[in-house]
Length: 410
Figure 1: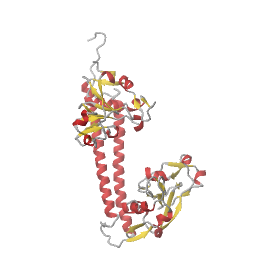
Figure 2: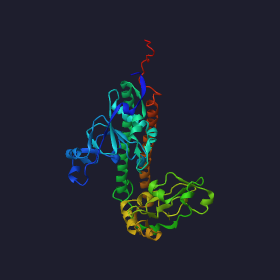
Figure 3: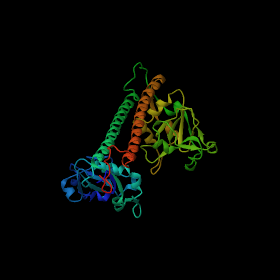
Figure 4: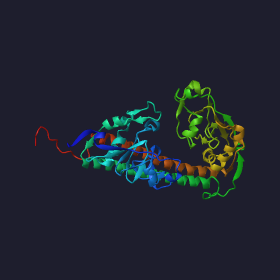
């Protein structure tokens, strides 16, 4: 082997197929052998799953993936719109949507995994949706797909460098999850009065939303208007999919013509989603706490409060107790609606204004810390992507290659 070469994946791997045992046999699914499917193939290293099989189930329908093989999603890539692959580091079995790529001599297992993930965009071009709505990764084309293959020492160096970055990302994910749990616990204590911040002892009062402000309705923005200009707008679906507690950024932009028919927002407005798919989520809300010119689209109900801290409301009006009230007032089945009249009857506990502000500050500081960690994690992911592009193409070498011998020269 020369210092490096481009080789077809099929020339350096052996492929195995998986399967699924009978799902109607409940005892098959009560074992301790992790079973990997498209939905559970989520990590670069595979050692566990939330579904587990018995040895008998494996013998009757699935197959064990050799430790050191790479599981590659071949059926469903278009559905997930990504290439999924992971290195098997502990005994697992796998289903028919996956292939186990067993490396031959000269191919470092972890390097193979990163080679597949690092060329994800190119591999996605090999997905065919003909006759299969989920999309199939053409195995023959994958086997003919060429990867950069340096000597094993350099493969190991590249794999370890990328693994170190994955370790940092995993540590940040764990820290973010911990911070979110701490914030959730703080909300449960602070927004119910179970825990009081130092210096506060005033009585909390129960108020209906109709007592602390008045409602108006968003209007005038269709799906086709959402990218018609440069003026920010909030659409009701974004309250479910994009925003939490308060609005931090904007994702729809309308023209001045569209804005003339939409509802302008004022600092401190609370925006409720007036329709949704389930009663459990109906009436999710966010606080608008910026001075930017922004408009609200249709199916948004707007509470314009007075003499309260709107950021506090953004947190308090999404607590389980308030959500239960909103849910009980939702109307409809296939599409659930809630009216301003119904929302006006929703009750919440309100501390004195100064304590509202203090609580909102504590929670928003926690949010800022979480956002900073998320930004750091996302930046690390970008760095990893850049490293993969450089290292897995041979543009940057971690091990100085030996001179290639040509034409009998020594």
